[in-house]
Image (cartoon, rainbow, N blue to C red; front, top):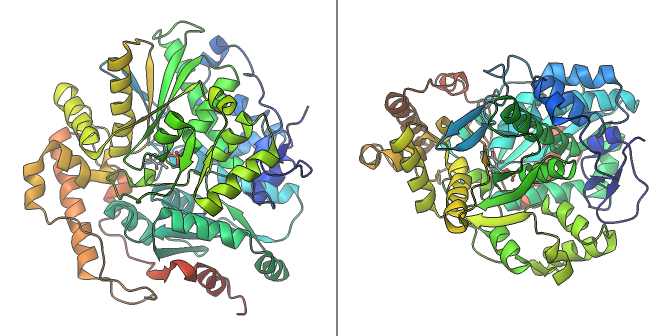
Length: 526
Ligand SMILES: *Cc1c(COP(=O)(O)O)cnc(C)c1O
């Protein structure tokens, strides 16, 4: 039976997979969830013999029921090719008995590539299937990595345009450089004078604006989302957990059916939700370790059952996890209410209105597969330095959060269950923070990378970038070179090419100006 998608917030008629991908978000503001979770397609032994593309096909097939075999195979072949710098696509590194699942071997060197390299294929296929002649406008809020991965995926894809909003002082220098140098006739990048939550809320508000939607439709345009709320992103992420387990099995690291733990550095709760879906499909996973940085709203939620975003937003060295409103948690809330859309809508209303909600005791019991943990800036840095000193393996700041949480969990519980850590970015993407952990004396010599506060809201294309931003980028590249010297790791092409890349995007806007920015970019009459 074909799996269809229903909303977490109302009993609206379910839609097909391709419609859910095109819409991104349900019209009632809810997220699309599969009507049921399919079982694993075949035995783990059999999966162990497959390569990444084959596993991805087997895992995704039941979720994308209205795609033909040929369509889905073509999407997968287009996505997981030599854009990735390794045949394995998502290789495993075993370090001190822990398995790091490296999800950063794609074109923009963060795990977002795992899903965003296939999303444009899924979306254009979905457009054809639904016979629409509208142009799809991808609106995306980014905490740093989604933006570049989505830009790279959608650049010059016919029938699409993409607009990315990023917090102008909330991303790393390399992340910013990656986005601001993006080529493509259909791409736009806008810095917002606010944090990631502001960007995400702004995008959600634009999606929810019925008048604008109408205006867009008349111009032959329709919005969609490349954020992890889109099931076209969530489903491809399930594949690598199944693949990792199959690999461990093939390499004799685990026995068939042996349960493992999975630790995930978490922000918007998309990556860990995919691991949870893999578990529900029957992958032998015991605990899901949800690792937060100092924005530990999820840790508190798992500890107390109360989700409370009313707290200071902290800028950390793991910016892609600097999030206080974890959008994908809504899908888990929906499950633990017993699939009650009305109750879920009430919780989300409370979050929007009061900034918090509290789940029932019964709901909390259903969170049993999850373990919430967090690591401070110091703990993350100590994890990076400790593992490097002992084994010479360098991990990025986000991965370090999960790695630190996993280490502490093992130490505190004595639990020796094998541990898989999702490694979500190349350390080169956050070179200054890595060096601050590995070699503080080097950092003392490099100009401190400070927020770029000389640029003004409203600054437009063509205006000179501040000297401070240039210094910040220069300092980041000094760190890239030093990291390469220290670790012997090859500098990824994605970083090398930034040195000489031309800056192409200079738009900035205040939080309230996001909709106007969209209208301006789309040439809609104001
Ligand atoms: C996006 C991101 C995360 C957080 O993933 P979510 O799916 O938002 O929880 C962690 N690390 C890196 C490097 C990321 O880019």
